[in-house]
Image (cartoon, rainbow, N blue to C red):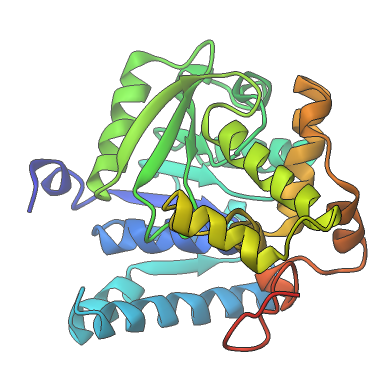
Length: 295
């Protein structure tokens, strides 16, 4: 056991939001030994969350990452509650991981403040940390902790400091991330931070290429994975993240940074008809079939 991991054996944290990112965040904290609480009010989503967690743990057993007893213990460390108000008081860390809508995040952060955790983080991939910090009582204890999907596979956590984020909070967030076996980068609060700007610009350009008939989604992704050795192509990754999430971020960044981040027509049309990617079964790829063949 590493020194960092040994320091967090009695730590407890909360995640607000049981969607794709919330599930992944809860899983990696529980795998590292944290007592983990997930606030998810929707019963159907909570059931899907439990199924995803079970599948991830079983996958870990099959890959030799853990034995069955360790998988069982991991799942036992994750507790679902029906709302923010049901989270325990004075947790070491609470991470907000709800959709990228300002009013929703503000409401959730107000609820988290009432539970008086030591550190509050947001998993936003694009929203201003300083703007969100207006919803907490002590902005020195507020920071961005941007995880990447799939959380259990990707080893980076992007830490975003706000104007009032303290050095102690940054150090604590870095220790927490390192306890998961993750590496961190530290960026200042600018639109899109570092990773979202890099990732989104490639994703939007790939979508425009499909829209313009340059090549199929499958071949565009193959170019990225074979020629540039990306672990996943930009269109398949967009499907995994969620095309609705991609659209929200593109709209936000286009307002902040200009036309180069404007969402392409194909993305707006796909989201409008409910083709959201993996979670809906259809996006740039067909996720309803095992081969996930290109549309």
